[in-house]
Length: 223
Length: 214
Length: 201
Image (cartoon, rainbow over all chains, first blue to last red; front, side, top):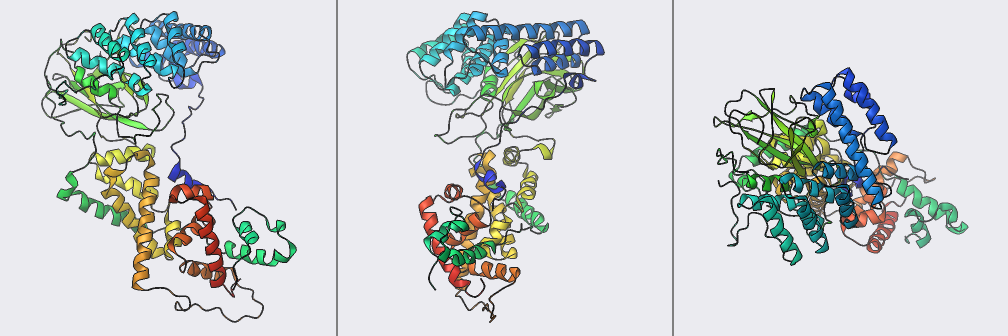
C-alpha cells in the first residue's frame, strides 16, 4: 500500500540536483555561430570529450564569440585555447593525484590557469583542498583573486593560510569580497591580500566587510 | 469490545503480513485490514475560488501599514544609490556586496557550509546597475543567458542615466558584460574581470548561498 | 577600464528582489523572494501550486471538504502574513504544511469546545444487518466519522500513515514525536476505531 511520496518530498527534502540534458553540440550551436565555427567546434568538442574534458565550457565560449560578433577564426582559436587549458588542468590534476577530476574541478583548473596560475600552482591548490575544502571552489576563488590583481604567489599564500587556519569554505568564498573591501580602502590588491594572510595565519577572523574599527557598519555606497 | 491483538496491530503497521498471523488470529486480522482499507485515499480538490479569496485577503493585508516592516534582511531599501562618476576608483563596496551578493537569506546556524557546485535549482537575485547616461539601450549578457543581449535588457532608473535590472541567477560563478546600444561591450569596472579569449574582458560574479549577512 | 567608451561607466551589483520572467520556471524560493521584495501579486503562484496539495490531509483531519477549504485558505493567508519568518524559502512547502497543521489542530480544538462529539450523537448508528457485510462506501463514511472521535494526535498519525502513506520515521520528522510514541498513539487509535466501527466491519 505504497503511496507516492509527493507529500513527504515537499515537506522534507531539498530540491534534487539538476542534471544537464545531454544535447548534441551541433544542435546547440545551430543559429548561434557560423557553419565554419560549428564544424570546427563540433570536432574540438569531440576530441575534448574523448579526453574526458567537459564539453559545455567549449560550447558556451563558441556561443559567446558568436554573440559578440567575433570573426570565425578568432572564435575557433579561443575555443581551441580553452580546450588546451582544460587539458593542461586535467594533466595537472591527474599528476596531483586526482584520478578522476569532475568537470567542475577541470573548469576551475582551466580558469585558474587562465588567470595566470601555473600547472604546479593548480596542483598545490588541489592537494591542499582535502575535505571539507572542495577543489573546484579553491581553484575558483584563486582564479577570482588573481583576476582582482592579487599576485599569483600571494593568491596561493592566502588560500593556503586560510585552509591551514581551518577557516570555513564559506570564508574562503568571501575572500574576493574581502580583498575588494581592502582595495576600496586604498590598499593595492597585493596589500589587501597580505593583510588577510596575516590575519588568517594569526588566527584572527578577518573583520567582516563594512565593519570599521569603531564597529559601526560602513555604508559601501558612500563615495 | 477488546482491542486488537498486538500481532494484528503489527499487520496494520505494515510490519507483518496477514499470512504471518497464527490461524486463530486470522479472522481478527482480516477485520482489521478491512478497517484500514476503508480509509479514503481519494485526492481532494478545492474550489478554484480559493485563489481569489486568498489573493483578496493577501492584497488587503499587503496594503495595511503594518506590512511595511518586512524583516527581510536583503530588501533593497536604499535603492537611491549615490552614484558618482569616478572612473579611477573601483567601486569596491559594490563588489563587496556583489561577491557576497549572493547572500540571500540567513540559514540556521547549524546548517552545513555551502557548496559552490551548481547542484540545485536555487537561484539568487542579482541586481545589475550601469551608469551610461548617453545610451539608448543597455543589456547584460553572460553565461547565465547564453550571451543573448535581448534576454536581459536594463531599464532606465529615473533620469539620472542609471540603467538597471535584476536577474535570478543560479548558484555558481558567471561571466558577463554589458552591451550598450547593441554594439559596445562594456565590462563592469567594479567587478573582477578575466580575459574573454577574444581580446576583450568579461566580468565575474560569484553566486552562492551563504551563512553571513552583509 | 573598459575599452573605448565615451562616457565613464560605473556599475554596481548587489542583491535584491526582482522580477522573474516565466512563472513556470520559478521555484518556490524565487517566488517567495519576489513577494518579499514587494511583488505581492506573485503570491498567486504559490496559492495555485499548493491549493490542493494538502487538501486531502486537511479534509481527513477536519472531516469535511468545506471546513478543509477554509483551513487551507486561512493557512495560505497566514503564510503570506508570516512570509518574512520563512527562514528557508526553498522549504516553503514544508513550512506551509506546518502552518496548515497548526490551523487544523486549532480548528479541532474550537469544534470540540463548541460541540463535543460523542459517539452516537452524530446520528450514525450501525444498521442491523444479519450477515455483517457492508458496502465499501458505507464503511468509508463510517471510518471518516469515526476518525472524528479520535484525539487530534491519533487522527493525525492515522491520516498520515494510512491516507498519505507515510512511514513512522517520516511522520516523526513532521510531528516531532518519537516513533515509539507515534506507534503507541496509533495502536490506541486502532482499538478505538475498532470499537467505533463495530458492526461496520
